[in-house]
Length: 381
Image (cartoon, rainbow, N blue to C red; front, side, top):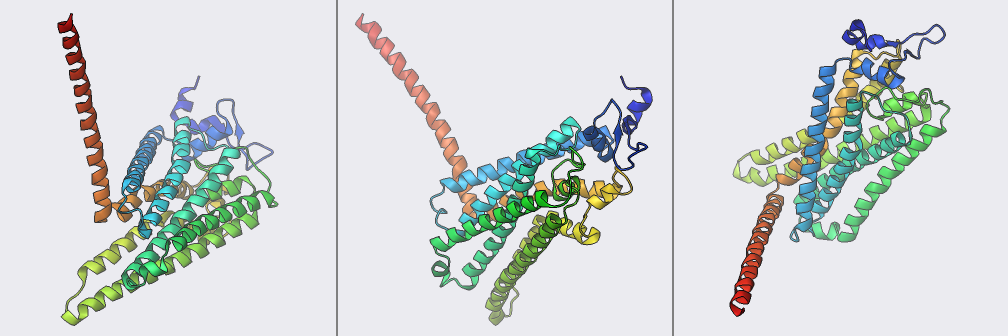
């Protein structure tokens, strides 16, 4: 049973400093290291409950919106041949994979009030999360490049973006993403760092927490941050080039009439704003990597002791929330704003209503046939 003081201040259940070790917690019998690390991050029970509801709602809505959009696109024969729809389906697949990788583990950690254990599942989550993030980033870049070809090179659009080249682009997206994830995990376990603890100090196996648990292997950290920064920079350059060229063509089309293409300007600003929101988790990681060099936010977690600073906790929790925002907004930004996609979704609901009505009519017809057969058999007797 907890004493009144222990119930009032849960962090008192952990004695963080022992005589022989000033960096590892000496845990009392009441809480294990995972529970102590969790209390150092979220000592207030009300905040935990609020976060549980936030992550549950984000996860459920993400699954619902992405699942319905993917199902609606799959049933539409009119959109199946379009290259942009193929890239959009790939983005939805990456978002579903990202939501399934990040959402349930965070909810489980919050519900159990424990940080993530460093196990095989932690390595799988780290690998799949890396692959899904890189795949989403590259897919959005290919979607911007596809729109550029459609707007600025409409005559040669189908000649340039053939079905084989589209499939090759999708295959290269996944090959590149899987390769980066595989090399990163291999370097993580081949480095000179040693596994410090059996549990991580975060609610998710994100890079800084995993690298801290493995003793900060330098090769893995340098590779991850270099590849992430280079990929992000190239994708931003391609995205900026594509939409600036589209805006220039739209503006030049209006210049002979001495008018300003306000719609084109708003469209470009909207998609650029949505891109920044999509890249917010990556931008946060790049900023933290640049600020704290190789150790990233884990440097703040490790110093001055096992209890993380408020900045480290804020960065970690902000990253967890922002990882679930892009999968939720991507179907709205890149799908439902398009009239053809909206018609496909409306046809899905109409098909569902028509099927339900047909089933109801079929049930009434079967009842009528059954009653008629009873009356005919009774009359014959």
